[in-house]
Image 1 (cartoon, rainbow, N blue to C red):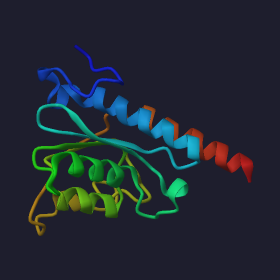
Image 2 (cartoon, one colour):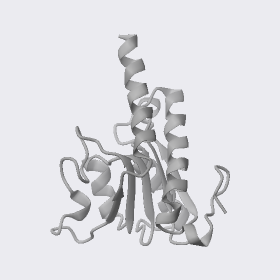
Image 3 (cartoon, rainbow, N blue to C red):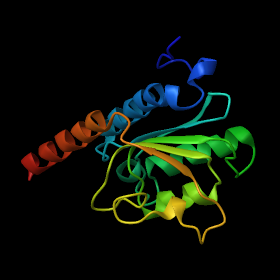
Image 4 (cartoon, one colour):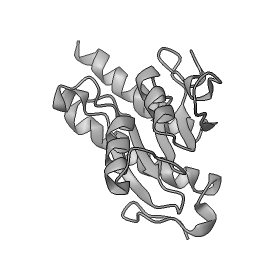
Length: 169
């Protein structure tokens, strides 16, 4: 049974890779919502080991005048509050764009089990494009990564945003 945008629970068979597309669609909804306040359209959800969405976030840097208000950090703060702890053991972070160094570091420090992302970020990506912070063996925790989930949809949302922004200059 597919999860709808209003549902926070995935069917048991979607608790890992099978749910990645479904969860990415929820992250894409968050990214689209960021357009309402002129933020770069990046969205994120955090899913616990049972397949329940426990955190949702979108870029809010422009809206909140906060340089740390990236989608991943917003969603991870919400997830930590839902769990009542900073550790996101067993959780999956699903984000539309490859995390930057700040977010990749936070994902590793939070001890998330998995990271699923859509589009690569050749300018700032810290998971595969420029660095691999979440897999660095010098860190105390490494995160399992799945990249390229609904990558084209994620990339097109970003391309359209930047085309429009360039057109306004």
